[in-house]
Image (cartoon, rainbow, N blue to C red; front, top):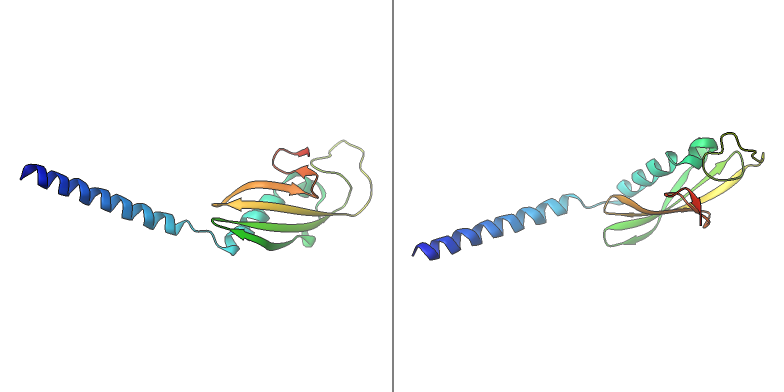
Length: 126
């Protein structure tokens, strides 16, 4: 009888833990607004945008979805050519459009490229 009671208690605890885990995972589901907010925060804090990105030019769109995530495309114009923080470097005086592809999975930026040639996470040319 004691063994049966022990198995019943362990089973009940396991079921309660499983239910709690499923409920907490359900609250972490990201929606399009979350993805757009994460992408905007990432781009506006990235070195290229901070250096000379024109604030009123940033446009964001959801361009893809997958389980647990989104692809967000962001476009903006910089006042000069080049990537990253170019403080102290020679820069061209040319309005330069940039297109960023941001992959967000489970609330985290997993991949971010600019113009298909610059890794925004490592801040290096690809």
